[in-house]
Picture (tube, rainbow, N blue to C red):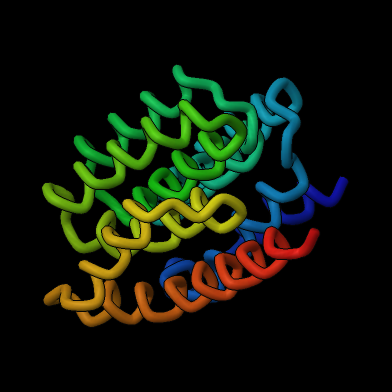
Length: 188
């Protein structure tokens, strides 16, 4: 019922409303309703593809990423990687973050996702590159790795101001978590 309400709001929005940044919160809310519910999300993903062309793929990728979050589903990670590296559009941001959300469920998948994200960082356009710092931080926030910290540190000197600002914010989160982790391991 809540999902249908969100879909109806998105369907009734004018094109000018959909282009506003706040409109991206509705697909996020829709995705959170289906967090970890892969089978149930299929119908809402199909329904979201009937929305305005400006928001339909963004909504579908948000729901798909959150529905498979933490599963470690390698096929879904590969699918999102192909979408984020070969297609155009603003919906590629959720696909990049989706790679991290899905892969954070297992260590080997997280390492594979880091390699994918580094490739996207190297060859992706600004839409993809701006999402990479958040994705890297999501992969390392509960398990800090030195090589991820190094990659995040490199981003502080990026030519895109949004990428470097994302680094500063997320590097602080990772450092706080790392400090907390190192202090808790010192205790007997």
